[in-house]
Length: 152
Picture 1 (cartoon, rainbow, N blue to C red):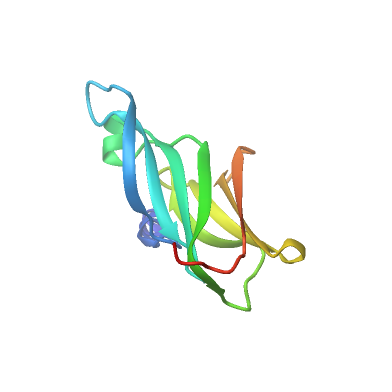
Picture 2 (tube, rainbow, N blue to C red; picture 1 turned 60 degrees about the horizontal axis):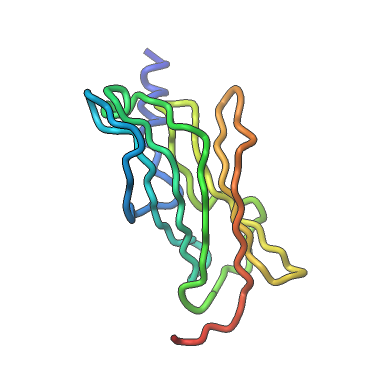
């Protein structure tokens, strides 16, 4: 009974950042359930105005994927861009999670963390996947030099 309650609490936790789907492509046809696909999502850094990140990642289809029981692959790609004047909180923490999403029913997540390279006046974003027992070393990184915003 305790395990069931703990699982419900974990499933009810909101994502740190909310992503909006930009588009997707099918990669493998499945007879039953949705196809395997690559999804492209966008999210804004919640503590840095003027930054949007684009994330591409695999989503598992089939019956398990359709029911939300499948485990998605650990691979992801990220590109963050300055989309307006950058205004950031003075109390940013290196390694702070700006986006997090479950990629399996309970034990695996994909997350994006932010670092500030003060010497180069650059924001650095890292995407990686972790698991309670064993994570994956696969990752991707992107960087945004903080520049004055000029309206196009």
